[in-house]
Length: 192
Image 1: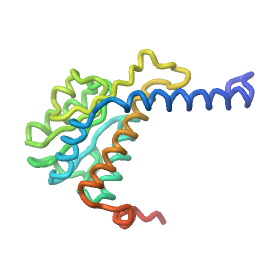
Image 2: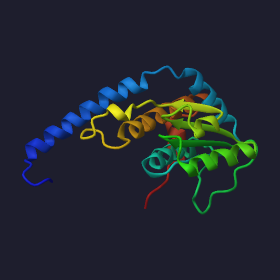
Image 3: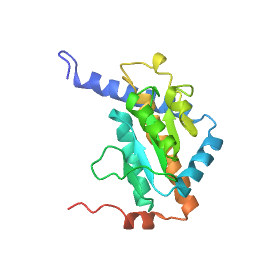
Image 4: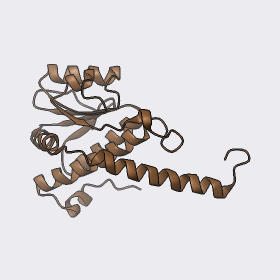
C-alpha cells in the first residue's frame, strides 16, 4: 500500500477500476466478429493439432485458452514447452499479441504458415506483421492510448478482453463438437 493511502481509498480505487474495466470490456467485445469467429471455429475443429503462443500476460491468456481446448478433447500444446511437438501441415496455431509486432510471435506465425499450418491471431493491430502472417485476425481494439493508466495499466484491457473473447470461442467450439461440461470435467486435470 502506498504511504499515506487509506484502506478506504484503496477499496474505492479497486471498485472504480472494476467498473472502468467492465464498461470498456463490454464496448470492446461488442464489435461484430461473427465472420472471424466462424472461420476460427472451422480451423480449430478441423486441425490435426492445435498450438497456442503468447508472451507475458498475453501468454497467460493463451495458456488459459489452451487448457480449455485440452478439456474439449483437442490435441493442444503451448509453443515453448519442452514437450511440445513440431507444428506440421494441417495443424493450427493461435497467437496472442496486442501489438502484433512481438518478434517471436511473428516468427512463430511465419514458420507455421511455411509448413502449412493455419494461423489465427488475437491482436490489437490488424495491419501488423502478425496480422499479415495470419489466416484469421481476431481484432481487439482496446485503444490503450486513451485508457486510464491508473485503472487499467499497460495492456490490461487487451489482455482481459482476450480472455473473454477466447472463452466465448471455447463455448462455440464446445457447441460445434457436441461437448458438455461433464465431458470437459472428465478431462480436467486432477490436482493432488
